[in-house]
Image (tube, rainbow, N blue to C red):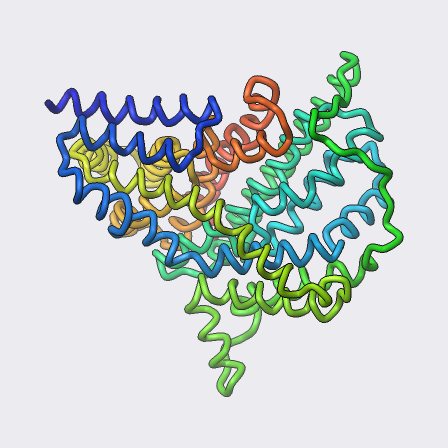
Length: 453
């Protein structure tokens, strides 16, 4: 029976990937894969589904409840930036500065600015894609590379590396370890530099290769191409102000010295709330957008309501994958996996890297992998003598590597929006979201060993 249980675990992951590659809804795929684990490991059906999958410590709705306000605040802010034209204004300013032939770099920078400001990845993809089409047509760049640029700007260094990023991944680690969103800033900046440097080099290399091979832009059947116009967009200065305010508020606990009085109390509160403080910061950014941009002030409730709806599918997709992981961690096979890695004799950082990478690969989710790792293994590594800030940063960056296998919900969503298949675009995306983050993780592991914090 033990062998059947192991085969069930492996088979469930294979099934999850297979369904993802065929476009099956990720929530259904997660539930079906969890059932495979339950049946092959002879687990109690009701308890495994209601507690393990749905409402346990690693349950889908436990996760959704804990992070609902952060998802919603990010999506609402993203709507406000998108509907007001502020996001397009930022991108158009970059076009004027860099030129349309730098479309991939522009896409990366625009996505990075939005996600570092707290906008949910899925919202960024929707917001940037229409403008990206115009840039691709002007520069005659293949859409597969636009996917990779989207992934670099919205799904790598701004989610796991940059100090203070309000991403779910950073918040999960901070909440579990009692660290701040700016934990290990030296390692954060180093990891981000590696991802940005290698990512931009790869994109530009592939762009030159594609041009030499005669490969250019081909629109999808549902793509709507219009002449880009920015006459009615907010000014660039007004557009970036909400982003600066949100980022400044989020990192303020690290920058403002501790002191008495109301400011000191506010900073103490901010530093102790890795989930609510970025949510509040994003809410303030949204209020600023409503004050600055009259076009969304006139339809404020529509914008706010649509933003809240934007958060639901990303949150539920992530929650479903975490629910699947919540079932997996209850199996004897997972418990034995934990014992094996803890007693492997490997250096603690290398063992940590292997643990979080495997869990993220199984779940196809960096946030899911982090949630499981932080709940089941993180304290064991701290007990081995690792600095909590190092555990925070290395685990967070590592989770953003093997999570991006074909069954990753963000990858599936991006390919769906851009009307491309895994065969057409996944290779470039995998280099950006798997290979390069792994290199970045190994780099900061070496730096942490040398004492960099």
